[in-house]
Length: 160
View 1 (cartoon, one colour):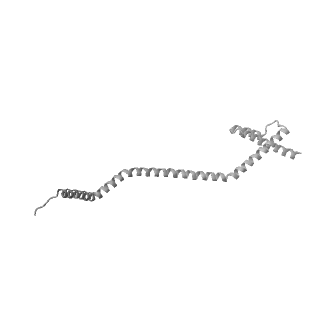
View 2 (cartoon, rainbow, N blue to C red; view 1 turned 180 degrees about the horizontal axis):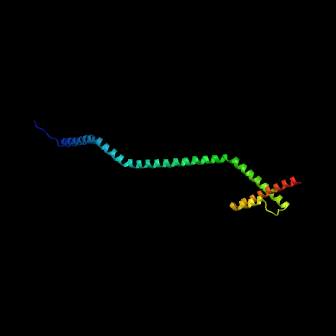
View 3 (cartoon, rainbow, N blue to C red; view 1 turned 45 degrees about the horizontal axis):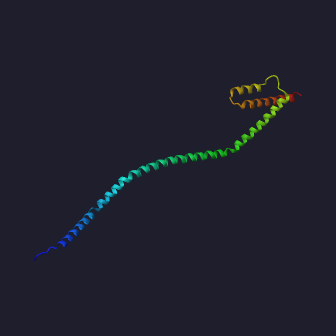
C-alpha cells in the first residue's frame, strides 16, 4: 500500500494539532495563571487597604474624643441653664443692695457727716485697703455708713 501524502492535509493537520496542543497547554496552566493573577492583585491592593484601615481607625478614635468633648459641653450648658434661677436671685439682691446703698448715701448726706470716725468706717477703710477690688470699697463704705446710721438712729430713739 502506498501512502499518499497530501501536503495540504498535512499542513491542516499540523495547524490543528498545534492549536489543540496550545489549548491543552493553556487549559493545563490556567489555574496557576489565575492564582498568579490573584496573588499579583492581592500584593498590589492589600497594603493601601491596610493603610486606609489604619487611617480610619485613627479618625474613629479622634471622632470619639470629639464626641465625648461635645457631650461634656452639652452637660455644662445644661448645668448653666439650671443656674438661671440662682443667678436671677443674685441679680435681684444686687439691685436691692444698690438701692439700699443709695438710700444710705442719701440719709448720710441729709444728716451730715459725723466728725469722729466710727468703728464701721474704720472697718470699711481696712477692708478697702486689703481687698483690691475697685467697685467694692464704695459699696463697703456705703454699707458701713448705713450700719452706722442705723446704730445712731437706734441710740437716738432709745435716748429720747
